[in-house]
Image 1 (cartoon, rainbow, N blue to C red):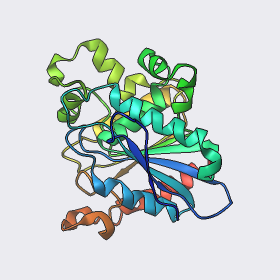
Image 2 (spheres, rainbow, N blue to C red):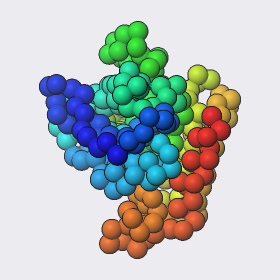
Image 3 (cartoon, one colour):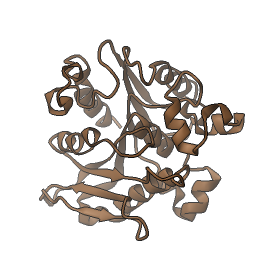
Length: 269
């Protein structure tokens, strides 16, 4: 396996992808993994390399994104520009990364799920076109997997993520900002297909957001799958002992099925 760090922003070393590329001449599908962390001070390690290795073992070349968080000036659309830069890099370097540029997927967790959903829905936003010019459509994944994602800029969500995203309290968001940055209202018929999963017991990011996103995808006739598992707190990651750390609540055999189900779903696209 070829494992290296590739920096994407010469002026900010926080923006990079870590590669997990097979030593093979055969082309694989690619997955960009986007860890969560509430758009706060860090990107969560539990939702980075372990996820990449799991899907590497399933036949994908995987890439873990490091994106801008932690400073007051780190606010939207910086994180979307970072994720979009990673998508474009992977596609433009498909030959050396041994991937099919037509089959580049993205997978995000919690706030990283929101960022992943932004890639899937916001490729035509003016700020994206300004950042990427005629390459703006290259940020769109073939499909996305959103894991217990932050989705709606409304009170019944993880308000901290949106406070960190625009560096102001959610109650100060304008209605235009709420609609623009909520995935359910960003969805159009052009959006990427989505596999969305959540646990019903999630007390940090309520499952309601994923349910609303599913309804929006259905209304827009975007292919999707919605999986709600009964047990498990927020942040279960792989939902097994690999990412549980010292918290047995993160070991949830029913929710662990998401990896297999997401893999099967991706292969249908």
